[in-house]
Length: 394
Image (cartoon, rainbow, N blue to C red; front, side, top):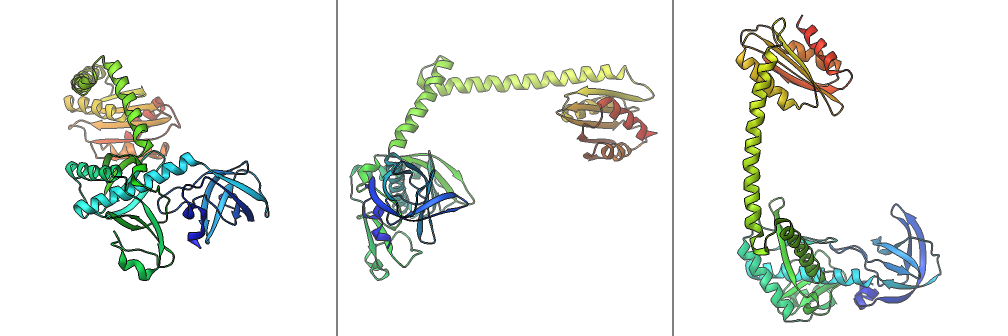
């Protein structure tokens, strides 16, 4: 029965004796099944425990067909007597995060009647998805404040197995999906919820809850937060980032946002200036290319020129000289790209070029009678591609 498993009898059990009942292997790897275990298997949003069986590392724990499989890094055999040692740092972290999730979720229900629809306990962050499309910053602060007050009050966290007939005695936060071996996690006068995870015995052991960020997720709001020792880890991480920023900017902490905004404003101005300079250079280059016109064509092969630059350059040329055809090709990152354009007084269609050239380079592209572009495999040089483009017009 579920309630007889060691991790339910005592969530603080770090070491236990057991016998290997069976051994096997599946797509996850080699595993053993014990007569009882304190290793919590993945479930209900909470990751599995790790640790040791004798000196053999336990790397994963999963429940399959009502059996708990302990995936191990070495061999154990049926009948072996083992001492199990749970990685307590990992287990207690999960207990803090899971209990913190219950408290924060209950805070949103208590204050705003907003339900949680999913929960994920990650390696660094925890998240819940709220059944609402928007949550204000004021609501986030109020829920966080209530959650931390419940923690500070050090209320007991009780767990008990009940029958379906007993459920009407409890003000459950949401309906339960199971009817057999129902396990409740209770924070008296605050939260009553069905849950199969491990939790500390009091809210005070959660230590603290800090909401970090939110994001929209398919018409839900995802809340990212941390509890317990992870709050200190996040504080340390952010303090290091701010300290590095202070050193780089030679500014005190309170002035860092203002200095960063000034730098960003300067960068935006520089980017605009650079873009304007690029446009001026393209105009200058377009005028230079017109000096090389032959038989009514301006042709040029380039190396590492973007298709956007080729397009701009071609439009500049035909915009100023309505009687010419422009043919450009470029070799870049193992690919060939091309642009063909014509002035208003030219009757030939540039589609003739793309139809012939794209087949030769196994490429893709398109356009109109006056302007085409495309790219494909580098099966020839840019100069050879220009030859094909000229031939397509004859």
